[in-house]
Image (tube, rainbow, N blue to C red; front, side, top):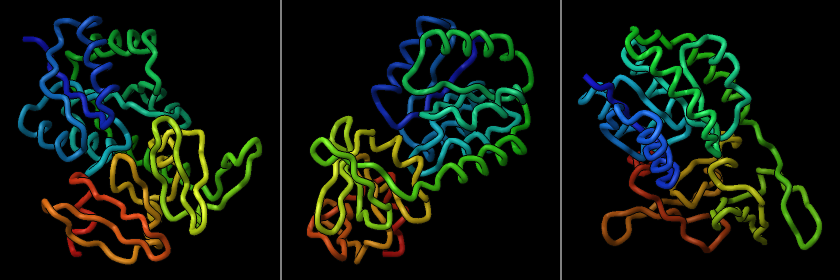
Length: 248
């Protein structure tokens, strides 16, 4: 029986890239589902019990580490991550593998080879490793200032000043009370370094400073939008992130 895999990645283009690469490198592998958030990944895990999981670490609804915890001892796990600073202990443990963004065809080929060698074995118990990875990740998320472009100069802005971040293709706007500053980094990569207690991802294109929120209200169609204390822009809340405001 052919092994089955789940791909959970909230960037559609990257999700498709992984799927297409697997079809070439491992045509016998059956991709049973491709999803864009952790809650859906957890549902597929329980319903279809795939032998292999490709999990983005930072996903809406439930992150990849929590999905992996639920799959401990049941599925082989490959994490997809923008940074490699906490990959080393996982590699040394030999329990999981990592694909770093942007994807490398050579790296994916090596990952597939490792999975083929392990797929007939009982998947490892991941709880101790995942606890270590989460602890390391939380330490990573301590960004206190960012460098922004102003003409030909760089200016340093503390994250306390920033009301929200807005994605603009491969750049990001850091919005303060009186200005918008251009950050030459994608929103997703930037969000992974912010304090998760202070900055919440609420939409594919927005990360908001919780301290800047005045209220949250319903809009036509049953959606939500955030009203800020010191800025006129309304911030949309997409469905995968609406659970943050269930009490509103």
